[in-house]
Length: 112
Length: 113
Image (cartoon, rainbow over all chains, first blue to last red; front, side, top):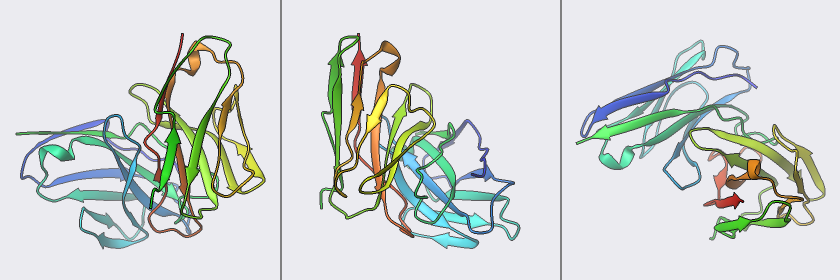
């Protein structure tokens, strides 16, 4: 499984755009990039998944450069409720039959 | 659609006691897995299953057993609880090629005293 590296923590303010970058230098050809969000006392929640270029949904955008060695999760106009831990994972599109490998994630703190 | 249901939500055990954490999903997912999360840490994989009758060990399997007799259920058994097993436990499920990744339950907070 490709190892991922992301910042331990980030701060921002309400209404700002937040970009969290994840490095995955050893990503395999058939690997997808998936981001999860976790609030305190809750299980992780799927945010977005992509393979290349750009993916956008109602919650976030995911930018993946051509070499796929990194990816950036973009959260537009964040609010206080976006304060959470964000995990970047690399693997099969379904998450992989053999479970998920989580790093420590990025603790995003949004201030008023 | 209930998704992934975990019971109980909270549990206190004495050292040496055994118990089973229940996990059920109603999405007909083949893949199920158990994780533990300790304070300030990411989730660590305990056991996983790729289908009924098939289970395998993850990163931290010692002290835990699993079985998968049906597609829907994937219970986690603590054989002889130890204080080091105090943690929050999450169950998750997914399906081949599911573009929405894994669906997680709401967790079981276990304290072993």
